[in-house]
Length: 370
Ligand code: UD1
Image 1 (cartoon, helix red, strand yellow):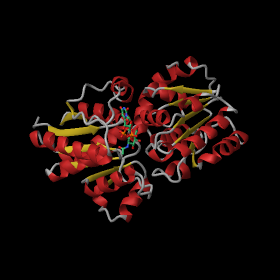
Image 2: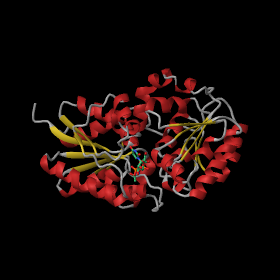
Image 3: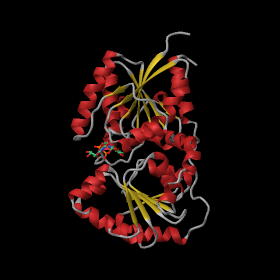
Image 4: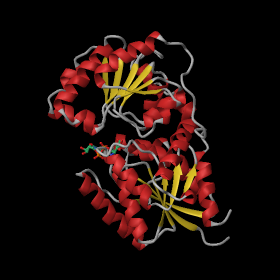
């Protein structure tokens, strides 16, 4: 056997860990590859990082950059410097970045300038909203990466519209669904909803962490009013992202949110516990990207409190709907009124649990001609 090909697999934040999970294991099994797991350290709390590594049987990262929190420039800049150093010390043939967080763009930039080829998994998504930091990260990463693995055909169209050459684009499907499919039995066997006293099919899961939804006091108050009105109908369970918890504390609004008897506040849940809550929910209200996709896969109604989404296929094909915060209760009631027990929407093509396999095959074709 010839020398193995060095590949860096980079992850930074909670949703990244879900995306690299199956890919790490698939690459580790590939006889031609030697994978180095790089954690940039953007998320560092145990329940935002370690618990995910444990759930997914991921080893301790080979390299930890310990970047931590900061402004966008600080986080991006520190990651750029630290990863450049790591790359220069042991240049991989390929760096794989996922998603749209600050580390995605920072590591891509460090790598391409050192002549390391970059592959972006979850490429081509666009909200067309440049006020979102993630949109800037997506545009820049896709512009400089060599290979763009997309989750759905609409992402291919976005890239073509931006003039990306066809040979750089490959639709591989949705990597988050791989993780769900692999963990499905453990998710079903988990007792989180029972522990919280929630009746399957009769509660709402809510998550909010986007700056646009949590960084302004008046907006937070509107959010609390909407969630209380929702909780008048059925219990609402709300795992609090650290950003959201910090904002509520700073605005002195935490107790106001918690004051409703049917609002269940909890710290960030681990993957299995959280997905146990989602799979039993009547409805999900969120501003997350990944949850729009997971609910689409499950056919569970999802109300996304955002003016746009980089994942329009979850609306056109799946179970997602974009709404204004003030319309939350009205839309929830409408979903209730047309409720039937079956799933809603359709699962997009290639959201089948085999994306990691396709990614490894795509890379093998380029690395060893397989
Ligand atoms: C980041 C991503 C976002 C993703 C989200 C998932 C960017 C631009 N944004 O946003 O796309 O949806 O992760 O969670 O990369 N904090 C902790 N402990 C942690 C991590 C963060 O307390 O382990 C707190 C810090 O106060 C920090 C704040 O949360 O300032 C926000 O964290 P940060 O990593 O800046 O962005 P997220 O809001 O998590």
